[in-house]
Length: 301
Image 1: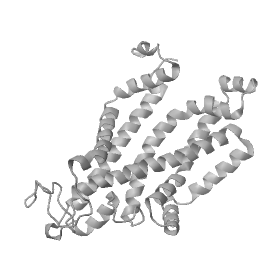
Image 2: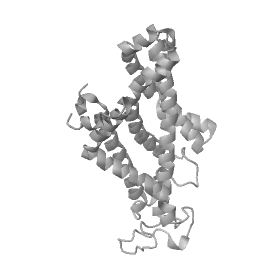
Image 3: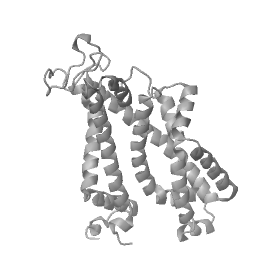
Image 4: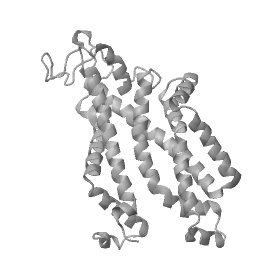
């Protein structure tokens, strides 16, 4: 590849990441998605410094004020107010914190559990593999949303319980992906050579197998963050997500649907925030998939 020579002074692992970043930077969709996603994260973390308002503060005399560009709007409330006079902009920004926290945390829980079980299942095989895969089948057979709602109804709706349930409900995806990769990798010469010299299995798994299955996990994790955000919004819409009064995009949609005929911004703007976040993550995920697949980026072996 044309730019591969500039990375030859790096170690193999660093060279792979440098070449991956170079391939990622050549994808317009990935660049746009990555920049948009970074901007969303930066705004969600830094907005209190520039827009220090309380998302729970109610001003009933200022209820249902439209966005500033619409007749009757005010720059004091750039995106208008809701039925209780709460600032829509600050509630959307606080909602982004909740969605990103739940998304990343749930993916972390699911990936840790799924990677561990997938590595064990694919590497050892036999009864261990059979047990883990049958357990995965049980999880797959039970409707995800029904499982989540049932568990939250028992444990109670808190942000910790929501992250735990969403994470543990999604481990099957990672386990199956990892297992398939491990079944192929464990037959490679370098793994067989490590076995032949008596290398402990845990060392083989962590040093030789795991680094070679990291790429699909990064792509999968990126895509699953988007799915988790959608699920969290759906559960919050149903009243089973993050408990009030903490603002979330899903609850804003649920509260605003009653006023949609007279106050379109209560539903449209949170929905737009969800759409832009999911779009940025999906664009970045597609770019990562292309950059991490040697067949697509055409890196010579």
